[in-house]
Image (cartoon, rainbow, N blue to C red):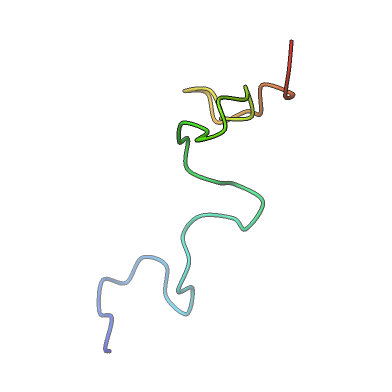
Length: 44
């Protein structure tokens, strides 16, 4: 697809790979990221 936004030109992914969107863990573990986008570090 043709992207003509000028921004992110030649960059299909604006977000870095190490970053993952915060989502609740189905297992119930505290592995979900916080709103800051930082890992909680698993169990506290």
